[in-house]
Image 1: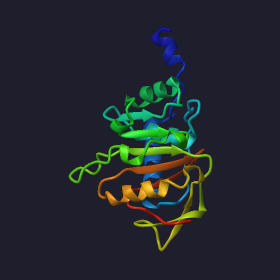
Image 2 (image 1 turned 180 degrees about the horizontal axis):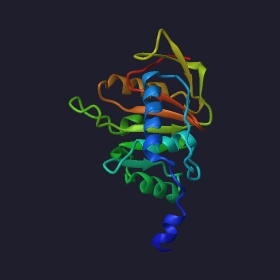
Image 3 (image 1 turned 90 degrees about the vertical axis):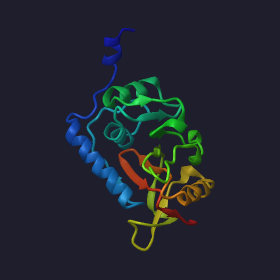
Image 4 (image 1 turned 90 degrees about the horizontal axis):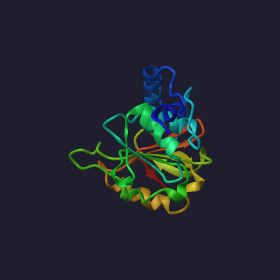
Length: 201
């Protein structure tokens, strides 16, 4: 297959990349600033097969040519080609090297501690995870607390199972190091920054 045919199979990204990227970036910042809030992401990009609208929008807005992206094995080569073409990012097959990671099935989510968590001098040199889930809610589930949360909020991500809170507690203790996570469900987005604590549901 020649290069022109390869490119013709790649769907369009944002119709106005600069404006759309800024809007999605603000949505992502809002999600991390107010953990547990469910935020709808508006995007006109044609998503690659198997990728949700909010996850796709984040990966069009956040990575650039200086970042490395890891896609969980279930995602197709077409999805990798799509993000590489539209963002110029570098693809990596090693999740521990990634600046951004996309997981569409939680059974493929590696241990959180195996991702880059930055250093005390450069805590921003850490991975950001985007995890697509079939259901997310803010009216039940874990009790969450921390910066950006007045008193207490709730977050329910049933697909993550019972082992996730312990992994997250270990990540939280690394502060200022540690990873940040975006949960996505279709066009919905929810942020879980490293500063947030998870309590029992």
